Length: 330
Ligand code: SAM
Image (cartoon, rainbow, N blue to C red; front, side, top):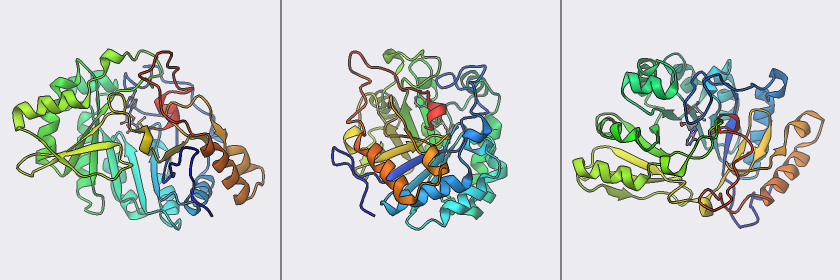
């Protein structure tokens, strides 16, 4: 099959597949305390449907698959899906984004199934502040999950992702920078985006990558920028003495839409061509109505032809995405 290229000439190489919209955390910048209205079970794609879809995408050159959610580890038997996807021809990079709370039990089975890369979200290294942000007292459990992941050398790199929020994250920066030096974790700071279900995001809440870098450089001296591939979402930095790596994902202050090679599939089988899309493309119906793989590929191509040029967070009249982060799959 031909490569999957959008109307602006960007080739799609990466898909993020949400396996559930449910989550066991309630991070303030993502989900309301009371949760959201969950999808019905029959609306959520089965493992077989996901594997078929990934197979079609892989034949169009999509070689990077990241499982996400909601919280992907709350989906029962997730290692079974990982094993199915690890066998898909053309999938070169299979990874998972998790809050880590069930990782101590699942890291082993996931590695055995073929998982090779992991992102763990971690916004605070202080118990009280962690609970304040996630509305769950689960820091020790997440740290245990990380320790367990570390025991599997197949699982590298382990990335630790912190959503950066002005007035909160500054205090975490020294502890997280120290973690990057002490542990084999790439610690990355991600600017907070207007994707919270509560619609409370304000531009002045964004603690930028540049601001965090400056805070770290006060203590550790100038950081050294490391090379990245062009489609990378993160700018990578090392400490001057070589120990440890940091990343900055700056979608608000330094948008990287021009090199975006990603699409997303929601847990209910809707293709999204941008985190901030207002429009989704239904793949669940063709997956279930007897359509052929060629039909499915044609539907994907049509959607990708309409991929947005860029998000417009910083523009007047910005209109929020049609769903929030946990419903899309971050
Ligand atoms: N539950 C998993 C986890 O915690 O990694 C996967 C899904 S979660 C939606 C994926 C990532 O999106 C997490 O790192 C989370 O912190 C991030 N996220 C959620 N809301 C966000 C927002 N408004 N801005 C930036 N990142 C956000």
